[in-house]
Image 1 (cartoon, one colour):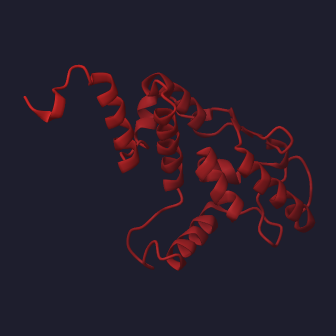
Image 2 (image 1 turned 60 degrees about the vertical axis):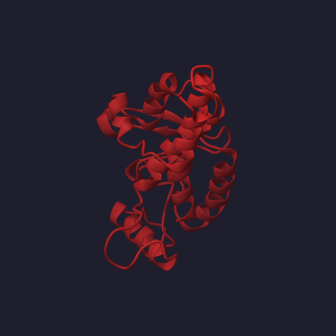
Length: 185
């Protein structure tokens, strides 16, 4: 479960994309996932961060002991060697969130799909901090997430305190010569 959660948070995959990965889709040497015929019938390559790659390699070593090996077999399998269903993984995540005190047993709280939004906002924040032109990079983020349009990506872009601070810093740097000194008029 650790590998699935980490992959969703660091690669922005949909849960269905992660669970449909086969052994041939996961290149543990070069650190690239092949997402095939996902939503909107789109396929794409998704690079992995070094830390995520280390965890997936460790998982793979354990995985090959409990489940058959073949190019079309599921990458993520349970201890019984069977592919996970989306409902099972969502239920496990719910239980983890309850145990961690992030939500009560009923009602609202973090959902597995929220990790995709976390990935998108974190990527934006990194671009802001790197001085990148965020608006010019949004189409790249859309492609990375497998969206057909930038508007589909915007649904995931929630404002956070850190993101607001970065935007504020960038605006003040841009407009410092236009703004009055000391806040006066």
